[in-house]
Amino acid sequence: MRKTSVLLRLAAAGAVVLGAAAAAVPANAASTAPQTSAAGAAAGSAVRALSVSPDSAGSTVCEGDLCIQRITSIINNSATVEAWADGYTFTGHFELLGPDGHMANCPASADYTWVAGGTGCNFKIPAGTGYTIKAWEGTRSTGYHVIGQVDFRV
Image (cartoon, rainbow, N blue to C red):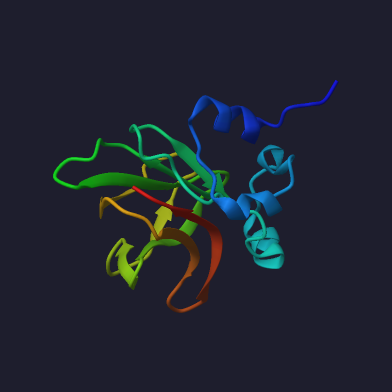
């Protein structure tokens, strides 16, 4: 009997829609634990979720120590997406990139300690494709490294 991965079950349920590049992702990728900062820096972002289903609020996608979720319906051609720390608490910021590059940092002018599973950062994003949110660990004085990255659409 063949096992069905968590990722395939979610896709079948319509919760997550993967792009064509997902064919390169191993079937067991969804069952891997979130990476710590050291592991994330060493491994890079070999396994990344490629898109969030925009059909309804509530779809959640996680990679590394970053989770994102659309928390509103699309209203006036935009929706709010929340980003938060998943597996462990870190100091740093979230960055939103769009089709034309950098759109915003959260917080905008300083770094913040994001508690694992706690309050996140909300980005109001126009409906469309080509968005990325990155979780950056570090400070201006120590430097930054990416500990999670999710590419998605609204």
